[in-house]
Amino acid sequence: MKKMFFLFLVIFISNNLYAQLRSFNDIFPNMSDDIHSAVFTNEGYIRSSRKQSGFIILGDAHLSNLDPQIVRIVLNRNPLYLVESIQVYIPSDKNISLLTVYNALSNVRDLKGRLYNSATRNREIPLFEDATRISSERQTNAIPDPPPATVLPQSETVYLRLRDVNFGNTFYRGDMALIQNGLRYTLSNFRNMSYLFVPVIKEEKFIAQLYFEPILEGVLIYSIAGADISDFFASRIHVDSAISKRLAVITQWAIDGIRR
Image 1 (cartoon, one colour):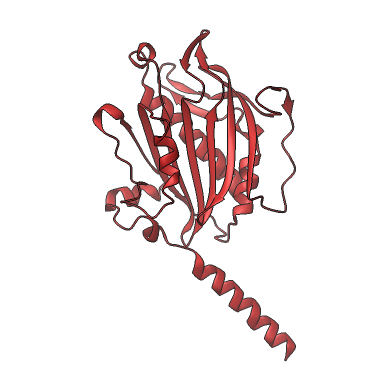
Image 2: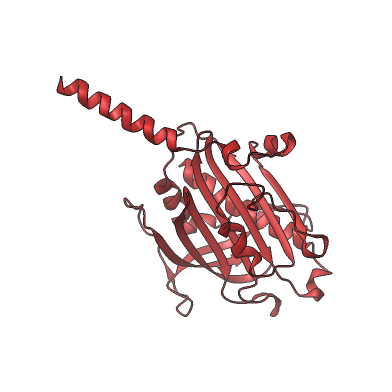
């Protein structure tokens, strides 16, 4: 009798937890069929827009049921360029927890050597030639990634040094926090991003928000990134493509970490 009661309790708790998961359509109830189809591909949906033409944001509060602060934090930086990405990763085991996501994001060194397609070089090259966690904004000495966590923190701040193929050493602050039904990961540059010692993106002028939520179909990864780039460089480089490729590499890094 006790065994039957225990089995019933496990099934009840499991079903209750499963019922709490939202579906993709719960979060994006009015999405068009073509965008919906793209979201469930390996590349996902990605779109760039510019302030002068007007931002189109699917994650905005009147179009989605995402926490409004995900988009608001980026827009508060007053970016000139915006890139939005939506993807659903469907794992073989759909019981992916936020702890798994957190541990994937903690593996900073795995960003090293990830390839992207360079139009100028006409081949795939590593975007980040090196990637490491650092102690703080002032102490930029490399420190090891931590072992996998067994407890999910409510919030945490980490610091990263990524040697970008175009900008050299770039420095980011990563703020992780549990919000709504998922985990938000905010990346922002706390030092200038420069090309040949000339600042291209000044400190705190790049920000990316990645939001992860286990849903009925798998894991939702919603990303929005904004940047303010000097007019001199904006007229000489394809800003939309530069942001999109970096966002795509970071998203795939997270997916690979979740898969493992």
